Image (tube, rainbow, N blue to C red):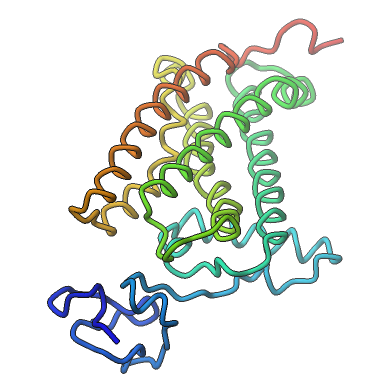
Length: 271
């Protein structure tokens, strides 16, 4: 059995307790007792596969699904690094799809409430007209743009190889996508809603830059996962940089083209 990372001089930390495993040859953390599969130990890519609260719920109980999906959305948005280090990527794909649907539904509801409030505050429209306007015009646009941006961020993560799992397959990537996309999209939607509530003129002047905030969770993950100087790693890094450029240009263009240009409800809202 080789040392972690094939190099006894490299630091490698237990994903559960943070103990430094440098120099160890046994595939087990002496501090917390976490045991690693041979595939992880040989590759040096160590992670703890922890089922989520949503994984352990009854899918036929809607209140459980809604409450637990909201909890996982908040936890993923506030602590996105946990998804890359501890999310059980070998769990059920259906639960990841359920998390994706419920997470984006929660964000859509938040966008509807926040944007309707901003419309009432800054235009003087009635609550009914404001809600109708944002549901028909604003919410589909902002949710679709945030979703697209978050999916592209996940694609960059997959290409660069940030997820702490060796030789990830399509099931592992789908598991990560289901939990990562709502959390990443929240980083774009929440600042947009708060900005429109506080200073809408500044938000409209900035234009389509707000979807780029969905990449904030990935920055810390990339900083914690240094890319090795191998040819394959360099190729993945170059591909990732190309995706970054395409993501930035595409999201800005999409946001400027699709989003409404004002909070003022049009005339048809009142009929």
